[in-house]
Image (cartoon, rainbow, N blue to C red):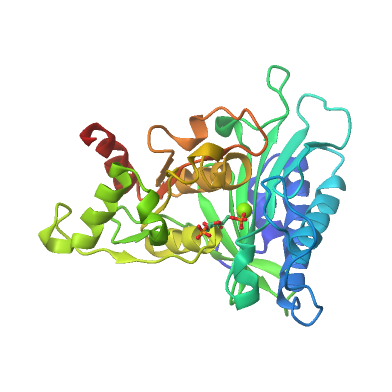
Length: 322
Ligand code: AHM
Ligand code: MG
């Protein structure tokens, strides 16, 4: 399979022609966003815009440009009815919803605080279908596709349709995405963890116990050494875990609990959870699988504990110790 183009892969592996068309459009949008990210300093698109997103966070010009690109690409699909974007307060109804039409939830440029320092950022998305008995918000267990693009040293598109996770690298010269990572699996054993340690004064006892156990190393309760990494770009952290293993934690803590945590369920947690499960890992909110959480609000937030299945299970089991 390695070496296939994205188009050839979709044709071979996906039977839903409307979904193929949509994923192809999203892939094109990510390619354009990659170019905008690459040229941000040249084009004067670094720094802040005058606006805030639905979470009250100051937007960057490039957040808004990326949203325009992603939105326009999805809107070209006759089958997309609903868009949910991190950058837009209201759900966008592109056309009167019919059962079977697509809902696309996306963060057009995640980790954008990394832009000015030239580190990896990306786009995250998931796709579901409108159902007669469900509202316009995705159901985690009914997702048809999830993915992210990472704008790093190379641009990659990582996708799952539920059974496996595949990674394509953008070949700028050949003008196509090429399958370079045909079966991305999260290694069973984790030796790295990712958490923003500067928030430790806000953590609850369980998070502190978990991190302490990792830091103590071979002499501690885990009986082995852990390495720590944090890029402040979820896509980069998850991509590392998909590539060489580990666990990612962004828990609800004393400071962010009033808003329900930091990361957003629909367009950050759901897509990464579907990818983690398809790669043999697990994603939890500390109690239950993220994909089992009911979405009640377009921008609702959640704890995210994601990575090697054994490690996420271990964290969840710690609740009984407190
Ligand atoms: P964003 O959508 O505003 O970019 O925020 C999400 C990002 C994640 O990519 C990352 O894991 C997290 O925020 C970093 O948070 P912190 O600033 O606490 O390190
Ligand atoms: Mg984000």
